[in-house]
Length: 116
Image: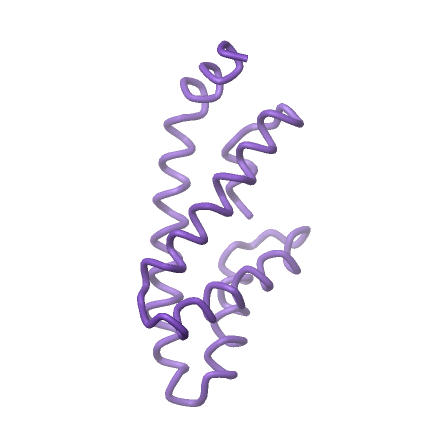
């Protein structure tokens, strides 16, 4: 188990950190700019519009439903709390779980799992 964890951290750590940073930047862009801008047209428009943009920005056709649902959750979290850190933490946690499962269960590359 120790060697598996070490391999995960050493082999995948740099690409994982890079991908996490990129995902948090996308959360900030979508939550802070798009969702907040669409809020002027109503909360429903803000939630579904930003979720759609979140899904499109990830560009992974095999995960569009997951991305759209996560986009809805992130937008709702932002609108309810009016705090951008909440969706950032949710997004980070989602990606961390996806990468961990991908690596430990399937042995896939961590950077592939983060694309979700």
